[in-house]
Amino acid sequence: MPLSEHEQRLLEQMERALSADDPKFANAMRGSRHGRAARRRLVIGVAAVVVGLVLLVVGASTSKIWLGAGGFIVMLAGAIWAFSPARGTAVRPDGQPGAGSAPRPPRPGRSRRGGSFMERMEQRWDRRRGQW
Image (cartoon, rainbow, N blue to C red):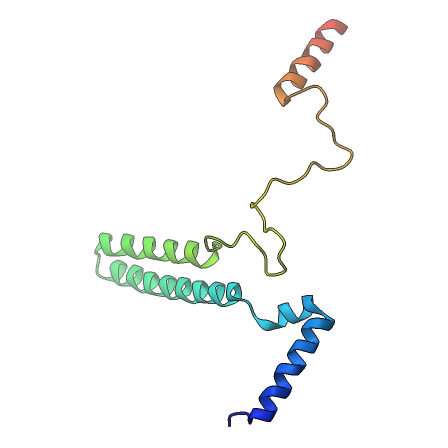
């Protein structure tokens, strides 16, 4: 049963009030396109895994190695498709950059003294050789 015009106006007014009061919560409850895209990728990937499994079993039961190998490849591709992030998802729904989108700042307490890793290793080696 559709909402009346008055109910729709009330709902829109409540949504605006919620967005003004707590924008982070409102954004999380709105349901982003990222969530729908991730669900779609998961469903397609699981379907590909099931199809690949069927092909693998049929290939093994009919002694057609090429069909079983193809089924395995379809299963593997489906699993990779389902669990890998989509392109362009470098921003999380809360607006912060996602993993791998920008270099991380150095951890506090750790400094890059002495140059690169190899230079530090050479310095340590030289100090050891000097002790003997």
